[in-house]
Length: 144
Image 1 (cartoon, one colour):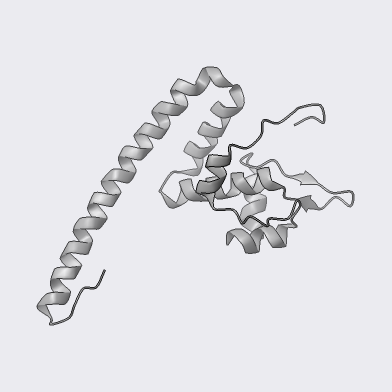
Image 2 (image 1 turned 30 degrees about the horizontal axis):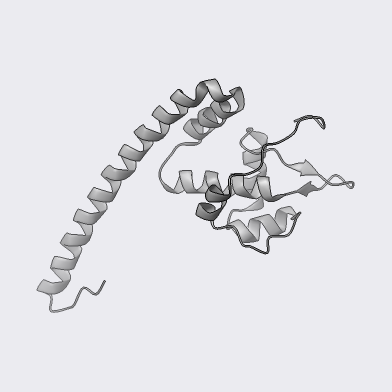
C-alpha cells in the first residue's frame, strides 16, 4: 500500500460481528495484537509474510497494528475457525484487492463456504444428539 492510497472506512456492521473491543487502542504492538486475538506472534508474522495482512511499521520499524489490521486478523481467524483454508482465504483477499468487478466471484466463494459450514453444523448437531442420548442411557442429564 502506498502513502497516497486512501482506505475505505471499515464497515461498522462487520466490526460488530468481529467483536473487537470498543476501547481498542489506535495502535498495538505485535505482543498486544497476539494477546488480544489469541494468535501467536509467529502466526501474525506468517499472515503478513504470505500477504494476508498489511501491517504498518512505526518510526522504530516495529509492527504497528491498527483497527484495520486487527479487523483483518479477526476476520481471517473466523474464516479459519470455520474450516476455510489459507489458500482460499488468500484467493478471496486477492479478489477483494482486484476490486468491485470480482464481487460475483467473492459471492460464489462465500456461498460455497456457507454450504460447507451448514453441513458441518448438521454433522455436529447429530453428534451432539448421539452424545446426549448416551449420557441419558448412562443415567446422566444432558443440560443445554
